[in-house]
Length: 239
Image (cartoon, rainbow, N blue to C red):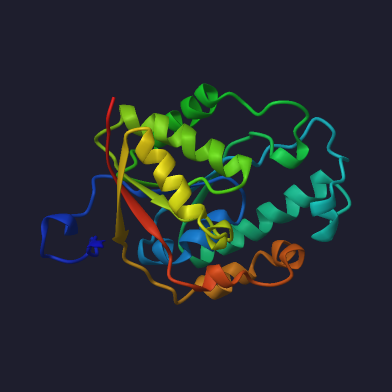
């Protein structure tokens, strides 16, 4: 396993601070903190870009998941989740940016095209002059897979950024899920190496608890959210 040193360290080529901030791209409100809370805690001033935060065409829509989380409508759920996310990101000294794509549970029909999603991510990453980007590995959930694939499209045309994949909580716990996705990416010419990124877990438990509605739906804090975070460096894309 390769180790990426702290950017505050003075030794080694990997220890040099990148030219721009760390950006964590998250499918949903909570994914960044659940999966990367330690990484965010180690890098104050990081930016979290959350993709699926748009209000559906019918704001009164009520889904089974939202009801399990204690909400009567999509509008109520999104308002509360954004407030929870704001507090959680404050605890990790991060800034949040939200895109307005529609969550899978609210969509009627096909998701947004990957090119459109990739264009939106490219615009945001360019706007914040990202130095390092952590994308979801893309496990199990359609939204996670779409965000991962869209981000990988951007990575192919932005070699000046250092790219990483994080293991999606809670789906990383599914037997064989991580390896199956890595095998798929390797088949597409995407080379990865496991890495250990600097982590500060001091505020992660409290930040996770900020997502009270999500934890209600999950029946408590996922065990994988309390385990060491998993990261893979993208070493290159072959044609």
